Image 1 (cartoon, rainbow, N blue to C red):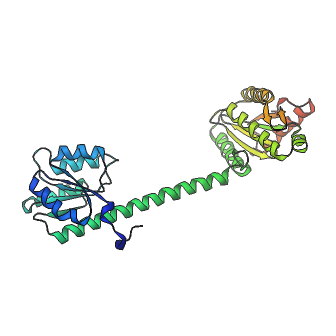
Image 2: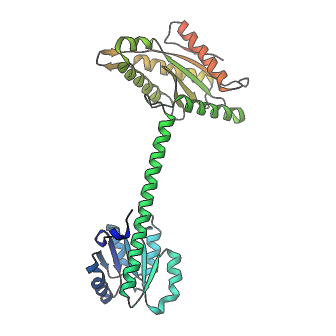
Image 3: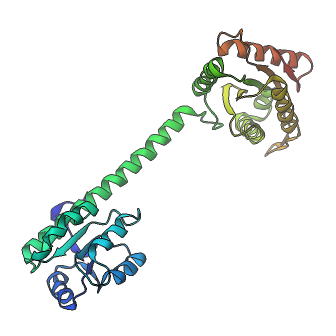
Length: 318
C-alpha cells in the first residue's frame, strides 16, 4: 500500500479540463513543477475523446463550459464502468455553488473554488490520489483473496490425481440430488464404474503408468457424459456418475456408450500401448430408497453382475 511519505507525483496522470486556456496555463504552472503527468482538454468533448484513449488517475473538471458542461461530462463518465472509478474534482467559481450538490450526486469526490489556493489544490489532489490508490490496492487484494479462496475450494473438492470430485464432494452432490428428487422429482440415475483388472496395470507397468491410464479413462468418461452430470472418484479405480433427470434405460444407454468408448481408447505409454475396459453398474431412484446408500448398493450389485458375466459389461439393477 502506498504510504504518504513514498507518494510520488510522477506516478500519477491527471486530466485537466477547462474551456478557458488561461486557466489551463495557470494549472500547468502550478502542477507541472510538482511532477504530475498532465494532460489538457479545452472543453468537454475533447476531454471525452482523450479519456477514450487513456484513463487518467484523476480529473480536474471545470463545472461550466459552453460545449458540454462539467456535470454532463461527469454523468457520462460515471455511467460507464470502465471510467466510473476515476475521481473527479470540480473547479468552480463562487457563483456556481448551487451546482455543487448536483456534482456530488453525480459522483464527484470534491470541488475547488476559483481562484485557486495553491496549498489547498495540492492537498486535495494528493488526498484523492492517495485514496484512489488505496482503494485500487484493496480491490486487487480482494481479487487475489477471492482467487486464492476459489483455488482452496477447488483443492478441497476435487481428487488431486484425476481432477474430478473427491469422495466427500461426490457424496455431497449425491445427497443433494437425492433430496431434490424426493421432494420434486423426476428421478435420477447413477453409474458405478470399476476399471477391469486395473491392479495388473500397476503391478506390470508401475504406478506412474497406472496414474496416466486412470486419468485418460476419466477424461474419456468426462467427454462422454453431459455437462449437467457429476463425476467423482468413489475410491481406487472406481468412479460414480450422477445423472440428473435420467431414467434407468436412458442411463443404461449412456453407460454402454461409456463402456465402448473406454474399450476403444488406446492409451499410449512409454512401455507400450494399453487398452482398458470398465464394468458398470446402473441404477435409478426408487421411492423405496431411504438414502443414496441404497442406490449405491444396487449399482454395486450391477458391477458384481458385470464382472461375473466376463467384465466389460453394463448391468441395470432396479
